[in-house]
Amino acid sequence: MANSSSIPHFLLLPLPGTRQLQLLHFCLFLAIYLAALLGNGLIISTIASDHHLHTPMYFFLLNLALLDLGTISTTLPKSMDNSLRNTRDISSPSCIAQAFFFLFFLSSEVCLLTTMSYDRYVAICRPLHYETLLGSRVCVHLAAAAWTCGALNALLHTANTFSLPLCQGNAVEQFFCEVPQILKLSCSTAYLRELGLLVVSSWLVFVCFVFIVVSYVQIFRAVLRIPSQQGRHKAFATCLPHLAVVCLCFSTGIFAYMKPPSISYPSCNLVLSILYSVVPPAVNPLIYSLRNQELKAALSKLIPGLF
Image (cartoon, rainbow, N blue to C red; front, top):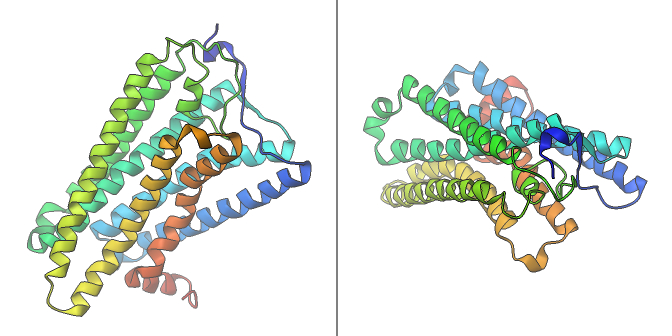
């Protein structure tokens, strides 16, 4: 029986197939990673450089792009490195750091998406009070609260998980270090405390999800009451990208953790983990840039001929 401090390294889930397939996985992950870096980097630089986009909605979008960059940078580089070196090893400190930062960015993103739904609710349902309710100082405080909640949640779970005694070896059934997978290595009775914390976190995520749903019910009711078709179209154009990102984030994560045991096998787990940890950070910039005319115009100014 040992804890993480006495285990020098962990073994990550190997990418299946021959050496050629591993190199193909590396190329695929590299392409996704570069696309995420480019897309989120463009959004960050565009919003930062265009003063017309210095509004609460784009301020939160800039924070979302930063979180997406952090999420995908936590998981993919080590996986690509292991594919190139044909190894599964990750040192214990690197595993702890990876688990912490992944949970940190993911938790912060859930909080930020909830804040963004509140921003859209105020903008559409209470437009006359928008500047009062979402002034620059309030926006900074809301964003800071999202990042702080994510950090506290990640610190609590990571410290508790890696202090548990591990008696099931050191092979992690995931291509990156993740708290639920590390829990599977702990002893049968030692993980109950962390399991309770995970239940509490799941309820908090559920509360965020309910808040988002209620906000959008109110938003759609208000949009449908707008008399002009152009007004409804503009309102939907600002809400639908955020709603699509919310659906992508929550649906992939919920299915990955709530899937039936009958479809729980390594290849399926690998695909699902890629869907909720890799795909959203790479796809989010595309979702926002396709339907947002203001962002597209600013991107065209930054890079002429892009659209």
